[in-house]
Image 1: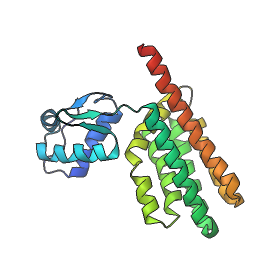
Image 2: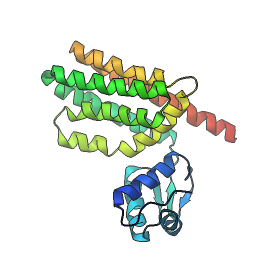
Image 3: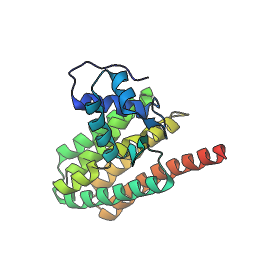
Image 4: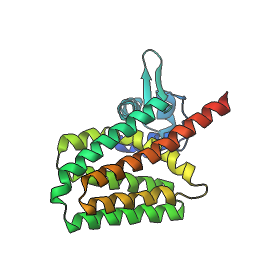
Length: 225
């Protein structure tokens, strides 16, 4: 059961509480999220929960089924393929746009974010590793200076967090470091100024993640049958 949060809290706090409940499987995949029960669990109004559920459906963490309500989304093979295909396209485009204007300070920031990912992975803190991972990629996209490109990337953020939660959990045995280390290859490719190498680095990074998630979905499907 989710923990109560302070009354008078913000919508963002309610969103975060429900989002964490989804990611830590308090609300497991396929579960119906009942507005009244969640409001009671969290100690907030139903109207605030209703708005939060709508936002989480927009993020892709919940599925809204007419006349039935909100259900925790199960990532399908198609979901994973579409998410990573779109991320690959957006991040390659962002790299192409920002490449002529990259400065030393940009590489310093990317390396700082990479070090944060690695430190969190080595300590086994998957939550911090995911946050740093997404911060790394968002920073790269933001370097494009294209607000619509960034908005498109941000629209995938919730689903990416959901997917990466599974991915880093998979890497916890034996280590999350192999996933974290892949980010240095993107930095090295950007430093080369070779767009073909950059595209390859981003594509291989995304393929590595999506292949592992697809295998995870297949394994679960086989276990269930």
